[in-house]
Length: 333
Ligand code: PEP
Ligand code: MN
Image (cartoon, rainbow, N blue to C red; front, side, top):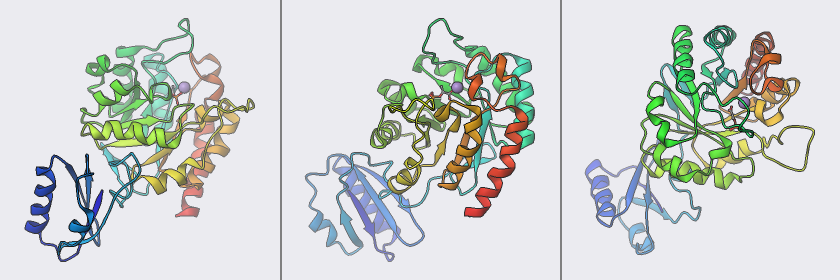
C-alpha cells in the first residue's frame, strides 16, 4: 500500500503516522520527493482501512499496490535510485561502463585489460572469479585468488570491481568487491538472495535466461526485503527458439523495467549476443533505449581466452565503441 502525504504534513505528523503503521507490524519505506512524501507500507495490509487512512488530514491519497514486488516498485519510490560505488554513481543519468574479461586468468591478463578499459573510458572493472560453467571440465575460475588479482588491478587503475558470487558460503572472499553480481543461473537462488539482503554492498542481479521481467523484480525484492536496497538489474538476453545469437537480447525489458521500478538497469550485449561483432551495435541500442550502463566483455587475446572468447571485444574495438556510445548518450540526453 502507498500513502502519499500532503505537502503541509509536518515532520512530527509524519512520524506519528509511520509509528502507527509500525505498531501494526508493518514496515514503512519513506520516499521524500521534490513535491511529496510517499510512504510505502509493506507487510500484510489487509486489515488496514484505506478509506479511514485517506481521510486523515495529512494524507493526499492511499492506494493498494497489486504487484507482488513492493520495495522495487516505482510507485513506492517514484524517483530513480542511484547507487554510489567509490567515486562512480550508477543510475544518476550518467552511463556506467563495466568492462573486463569474462574470467580473471592471470595477473598479467587482468592488469593489461584493466589498463586498456580504463584508458578507453570504463567506469568499473569486471572479471569472473567463481565461474558458473555448463561443463564441470571447463575452467572454473581463479576463485579467491582471482578476486585478489581483480582488486589489485582495479586499485592500480582506479576502478571499482564487480564479480559474481555463486554461493553465500563464499561471502568472506567478497569483502573487497565493490559490486557483487548474481549471475543468470542463480537469479532464483533464493537462499543466496536472502544472504545478499544482509550485505552492505550493491548487488547486480542478472536476468535468468528463462525468467520473466516480473521474476527478475521478485529476485530484487528478495534482496531488498532483507534490508539491502542497493540493487542493480541487468538484461543479458533470454533463451528463445532463435539460434543465430547465443541468447535473444530483450531490449524492450529496459523501458518496461524503467516504468515498473526505480532501480538502475544495465544491459550486457556480450552474453546477450555471444558474438563480438554484434556487441557494438547492440551496445549502442542498449544506450539508446535508456539503459543506465553497459557490461561488456573485453579480452586482450580473445582467441586464447579461457571463457567467452568469441564474444569478447579486443581493447581497440572497445575503445572505438566507447567513442560511439558517448555520441548516442549525448543524442538522447
Ligand atoms: C558473466 O557475467 O560472466 C556471466 C556468467 O553472465 P550470465 O550470468 O549473464 O551468463
Ligand atoms: Mn562471460
